[in-house]
Length: 239
Image: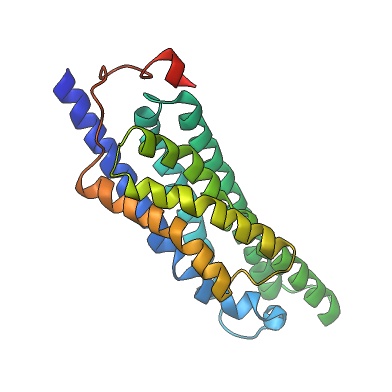
């Protein structure tokens, strides 16, 4: 039974690691693919191809699904140490995915209006600017802030119980407040979300997500000596 549970844990960690890297890889090209639309509201009038924008929205959807997948895969592992963190991680990942998909739908709506335009130029431009603004805020509150919440739930458990080398979740714990600080600063107009300060404040949380994905693929997770089927280490730690 112990060997079976160890094998299952390894498979879950491997699945979570692969999904982390898919999420990471799928998110990289989306900004460039969306740029012709989000940087030019008059794109709706017929300037440029729509294939890149559609591909970017599809990749956002993939990111959303694989993001939820990481939480589902890790849930049986994390709940052994903290049911609260396990549920919180799934919930925060799901909220992040919902916001991300909402932003993608905003851009796809512009694609539809562009291909089946009804109305004058002024009304189309107003609709385009409104939907781009919705995407902008979805991008800030979704991938711009939610990874910090995710890290607070997952990195805390991984650091406390040494499920991976502590330097990895430490990057998440350090990066979480930095990312939230960046989000608040962007919200109040301090700098742009794609600016150099935003990049450096985002870097620790991105490094955490990439590193934990790679480690779980290569090594899995290091489980402490607890009962293999125990839902939590102890009642005191279950919360």
